[in-house]
Image 1 (cartoon, rainbow, N blue to C red):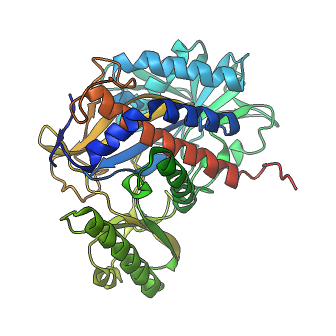
Image 2: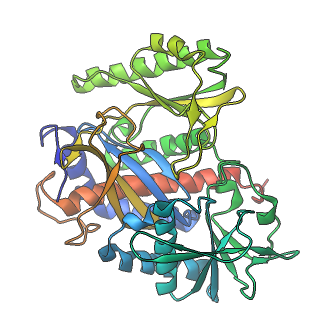
Length: 435
């Protein structure tokens, strides 16, 4: 099943797909060389939007939930990737402790935890789930709607290690994006591997750092393929000290919105695209911010002043008000012109270590092609894996072959993953400085 692309199956996206397929050996060599120099994030998920004229990542998650949306056909790939990742970091690993978000009532999120436990158990590890939620004081078994159970156990912290009662892990897997800050219980664990590292959490991470790394990489990658990097990269700007409640920083934000819209208009004109450009304004961190706001004209920014806005975590956290002036990102809006079952759809690519292991479509029947699909009412449709979807099919026409379309998604997803590894190096508090 290739999703139904609303735009004609001729045009820039098919030329891009053809260019990607023709360049497969060069692309794979390029990725190999990158991974010789840089460490991939332990796992990641990238939201991609296919406008029919450009294909770009719009969000990169370093603590992906939603593993329960991967089908059983995808599990062997995930298990192999998990084995490769663990072998590289801790070959003698025996015990793995998974630390989830504190959403012990969100059964959809816990189904994702159960799937992670399954993947790492099949990769040959003893896996248990340790909660850092102060409310969990004794082991708590939670029944999931699909009949599975997840057992949350309270973590036990010694001076240098973290574990459970009678369970001492050599590796700790965080599935908690630390949006409320880094809890002290996770700090100074010098004897255990903590994956991903603490500076991947939203207490340190900034979307603008990621977008900057991705922009630089897209230029190099564009040169490799002989394409305009704009076809795979959304234009962005960053505005500081914006406070919608008090109306501070609004002039700066308006000028950034205007500048990004002007650049996008130029590109639309260059490519003969008859769509109205828009931008998306969102917080620079995953924790605080104005939520996701779609703007089509710089004049609309003024109307946001004085409206209380909250941001909610994608994993079901409570809405939080923006308390103080914060940094926001103005990002070129990328339409999604894909449809699954008549709903607007965007592919989400899941990766572990350096490998694409699967993915799904996030589908929302009540949303428009220029709106955020991460909202109540979204459903998830697995990418079709009746045949291997990571290996391109030579000779198939662009736009006609599911493997070719998914291979292209995987290339863009991996490009965002390389950007995340650059971003992690740049923000690593323990990085060695070479003079």
